[in-house]
Image (cartoon, rainbow, N blue to C red; front, side):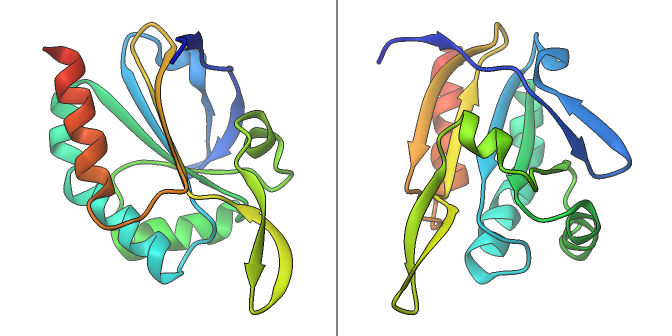
Length: 153
């Protein structure tokens, strides 16, 4: 895979913050795009990242979750799951488009546009080191953590 600079962006985040990717240079960044707050797969995935948060943090890693839900929905989801990281709201899909995670999906026999569950690992220099697309939730956060550990060695 050709290494490339991750596209910079800015989005509203939980906690009345604004997240700018380039402001986090010097740290590893894991961005996981997920379809919707309070759905089973998205809840499981967020809990995995929450449960491994200390280990990610020990590797100088910022975790960010992004979906099309609004900030109010994100605040409730974050509080309900006690997530120690921020969730970003991409209601206009601009960042989803930037990272090409919007796909046509089958939902109850109908074609709908939605987020393909995807994770991106960006290193401390802002280089996109790995993409996981069409993510299956079980064991995913552990797989991302293992990849970052191997990068350090």
